[in-house]
Image (cartoon, rainbow, N blue to C red):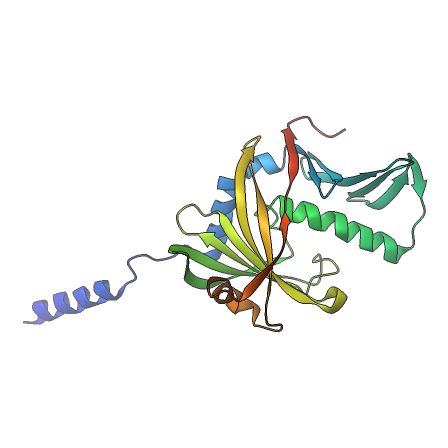
Length: 249
């Protein structure tokens, strides 16, 4: 009788275990980076155009130099962000900038590059990740992940909050949202489309939305998306993407 009881208890415990257990949050991000480009992110130079401005990223091991190049009829402006700091050149001449102005330009350069290479960057030291559960969006299952930043190393916008939705089968981040506080603050929700691999790195464009009703909880913005609670603001498109393996010199 005791043996039957033990078998019965064991069967109940097994039945109660989740059959489709989600991986932990670090595994989700690691797999996402791997399927999106892996080591190619760190040993490639990347060029692309965004809103008529040219961007380039040059890498050599842990050293990364980010640039944007703005050209017009009279000048070529090169904004360069590297580990030693930010510098602006106008027609090859170094321009002195106030610290506040330099930080503003550096953040702008970094932001465009950051979104272009997602999910790469989600393992940076300042990143804090939290698994929020599994959700359904358009009949697909997603792992929902919250991302925040430590103040040390998190940049000027360390208090921004991000949410990512990773496809449970492909581990690609099909959606992301963020809550920001500069310029009056706000929320954005981005839907990835036009996926393509260039030089074995995944690039996407985004449909960029905002909530129709302000101050909605950022963690419920996916519910707004599926229930027509967002309005389209713009399309975020990367053009003329090129990737090569030449080391930065």
